[in-house]
Image (cartoon, rainbow, N blue to C red; front, side, top):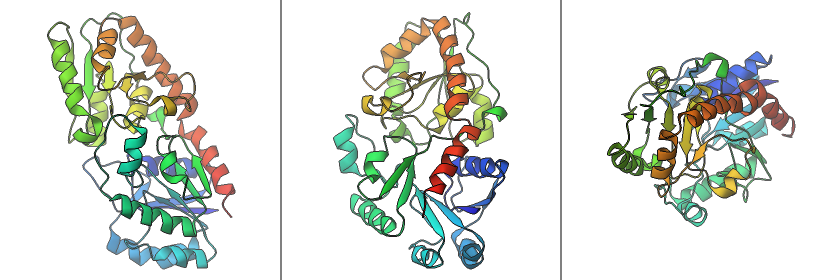
Length: 328
């Protein structure tokens, strides 16, 4: 089976899946037209929409399965989708969040409002209606996104975020450190809830010793070097689930703080080591971590082990291949 991933790289996930499929012996390639300051390396061809259009015919004739990402296909108006179907090729759409997270639906499930998607609710509905007309299968990363797409596709598969943890150095928080480092890395301050994080940090600074750093506008490699210095990494406080940063931070042996909704948390493995906090509880959660260095060490060790069990790319790829096998 020859597999093509396209056209939008989300937090290095396309690269990770492509490299994992290759390692499993499959012919696969990825094409990304979304380039950002994060500048992820390896496994995927960075291109643009103009160049990608030129590849449609040869790729459709060559590949067996097309794994699309983030509600995008090879062309902006998605007219390639029925053409690919007419060629008898398989397709699946991998939704990542803001491409499907309607404001109305998010407000009904989440007590903390998140900023609206770059798409209107009407545009999201139209997009999902269109894709589900031609594709019976979709992938999401967890049960926070699942409700936003399940009314459209016949089959919605949950595939854990993938991580090449063997290539990530780790350093557990020292149980003897009385001046821990807290890092927050907002790619989008409004979405991550940075204002609540900075408020809690400001209050805690008055009575507790620690070092606080923000990591912004750095490429991925530079940011990872900064994360290695941390004891605690505060990820996102509003969305209701954890993201790629949380997975990478756990792989590095760091304590992760993020907001995971109760209904979403119930679907994750029982040994999820993330310290759950929301805007109302963040200060108390961070204070508990600051006052308990032994707990920080234990959570760091548990985080690395959790990633090895559930997010390691070699464990995710068999799940992905099982999903592929179900596509008719």
